[in-house]
Length: 320
Image 1 (cartoon, one colour):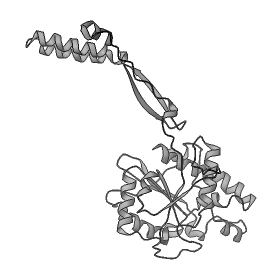
Image 2: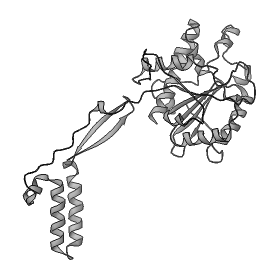
Image 3: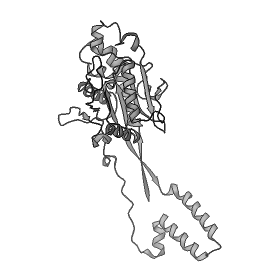
Image 4: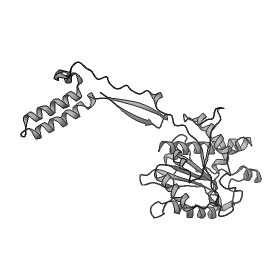
């Protein structure tokens, strides 16, 4: 008899088959059997012998034949091949929202960095890791845009929201996002700058995850988020390419002194899993979206900042 256990190896992003023969379990089963025999010995010796023979025949089909079951043999189960298991391919999923409560400078709402940011990110993710991505028949990356109320939300382990200092959740959206997060989903929110945008977003997040149950905490650089694939040694501040050009490449803070400090903050579930990541006072996704527009911007921000931390974030989400 052969038992099969499917194990997910996050280092190689594939399923492996671990074969465990019944002989490895024999000592344990025999020990349990002998314990039962000892306890029941004084009750009915005949019953004990019958029980023992049944257990032994279950462990050894050849012994069962000796008991008069004839020459029929039971073939062992066929081990499934790795190719029999469905492959999960990554899809960059952007959350759309329509209820904007306030205007942000240089902000456009949910589609601030869409569609080029997700498109370019998926290409780089496949190039730099073993993660497979969803593609269409022409081999182009397939993205997804969803409302929080879409039932398909639960099909995507990673979702992305941009310019979140603008939005207002409906009760239905807040409830659905809470369900998604507590069932194992991961939300990354990016590209919101300053205290006004932060306070507005936190007020909305509190509708989703009650603050008396789920604290917002600063994520230390020692967290595996910063080393799971690439070693990221600082909180990266990525400006929009518009700000970078306007400033003549002199500053990365889009609101001057108010936004000089980058925050990587998060909310963890009761098991210690990071389920909400907030990258505040930085525009990680612009380093993906605008990688082709300026060589210096590409080398300084896309290559050195946006892609390393972005890939770390997605790999963390997929393996936790």
